[in-house]
Image 1 (tube, rainbow, N blue to C red):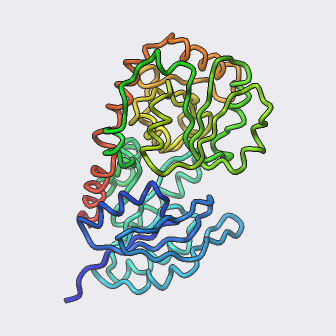
Image 2 (cartoon, rainbow, N blue to C red):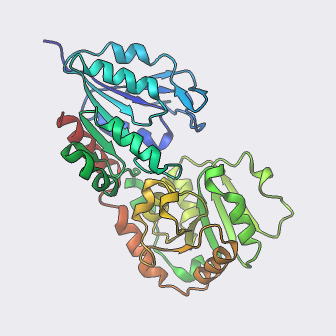
Image 3 (cartoon, rainbow, N blue to C red):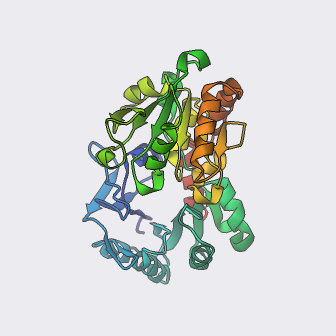
Length: 353
């Protein structure tokens, strides 16, 4: 009898996802197929990893449709009883159609992805729901997304509660001393259109005594920040070593993200940093569901520079209970939005089909 195979197709394997796949390898055997770079310019990072992976050429985009060249042969080799997990983005239409094809010969197929993100519309949500009907199981990013879908798809919906590896952070995180951190704020993420970083720079130009610490790829920073600006910004670059990240995060009073926030929010929460994000939840990524107004952070009016500047000053002047928010930020994600919990939930979806 042929042993069941587990094949995972991903657009790319970003660095933050590597700990999840390493931990998953300890529990089950799988192969992961990914492109070198996905449609959002995220690059696969598989150096020194122990899980089995195949890295294909960069994805190809044609009029909104995304193609992963070379992936079809891996999908079509699957046989009855095998399990296929693919990215659920309908723009990867060839992958989706291939999954439905191998389902006809007895392959169990699982949809894995975001239900609602910053770019999702009501029409695209309906398309996703229609596609999901053909899958044996649906694995979404968090419990809130799962609740939204279960009224349409029932018990085949599972949530992975997308998170990060926070074991090291819990050790490196320092006590939250409000007085010692005043004037230092943290931004984590790439400087992309999604981040709306230039909007933040404009807002900071209206305040005083603030130093913005930026962790992330900032190769294009000259386009949005001029060295002679009145805004004080320290670019720390793309840091992958949690020890180095902690040296920056532990000196900051709060986290700020002016655009569509995602995993950066969880990274900041694990360091006990209250968050300042805009108030349009449907324009964020799924991870923003962990944000609670005046519980673990404060929101500003979306696209309102004056309100953002005002909230920055209010937080820096300790007009909110930052100590309580810090405690709540940690508790929001430390137990159920991390690598260990994700592995258990992922295996739960696999074992259900």
